[in-house]
Length: 177
Image 1 (cartoon, helix red, strand yellow):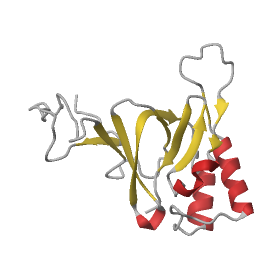
Image 2 (cartoon, rainbow, N blue to C red; image 1 turned 180 degrees about the vertical axis):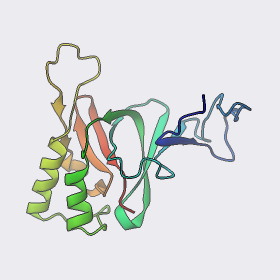
Image 3 (tube, rainbow, N blue to C red; image 1 turned 135 degrees about the vertical axis):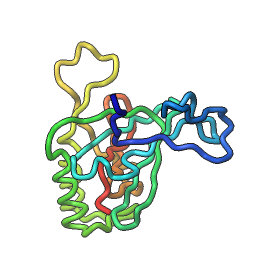
């Protein structure tokens, strides 16, 4: 069976301190950057383009760093160490696109000045996403994400700081550019 193309890929630095390498069968035995951490680039070749994918990267000392192209036309690369929580459903990123592509015209980057109305729309969009906390088997319903306004200067298109049931993280989706 041929390998399935994933919506993410792993990257490695030329001066890697890890001794991992690509095997003849296309797998990787060990993959780390010079910092000793694994780096995963979300949707590097746009193979997930138009699918409406949305993830939460919960900050945690996992040794895995996720990177996402963000900031609209600025095409900035932001990264967060932690673990990835996929969110499922169709059109999940529609309201976020309305804000960043429609209202901000693809120029939603860090340091953005938020009007009261736009900030309220962002809060509402973020709170529409809910996740279960890890290891919490007694929860009957997932907990809504909360916009982390203490980190609002970090907010950009496709990179929104949030608070999850497991602590701080970022909400990520496909950048418009």
